[in-house]
Length: 119
Image (cartoon, rainbow, N blue to C red; front, side, top):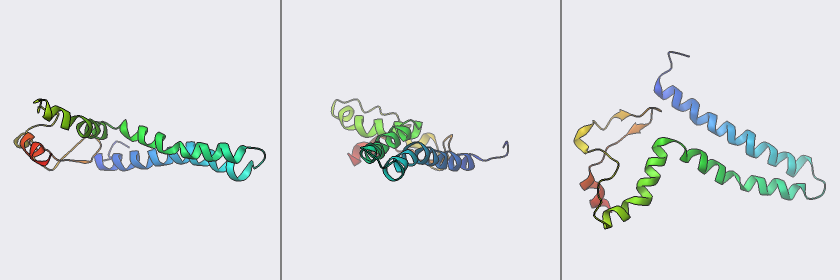
């Protein structure tokens, strides 16, 4: 309801995504593999179950914090090599290290120098 904290909402969203994958991917796969066992149904159920990784990965990449981390992972070496070290992170001094984002997960800022040193 209205009194839920950001961390409560984050937990509900997390388990909601897991439930979605269970219902959309694993229940149909199980039905095709173990209930509808005639013909090639087991093959199609197994194929459907293997698509689960793509669905889960895509679903979690839709989260803004994970998408930003993914972009940083993919683009940071190229940007640093080309001299464009202006990454999408704020300076270390701009926020405290215990801020939380909109979904209640901890947000840790890292300075551009620290990122450059790690790479």
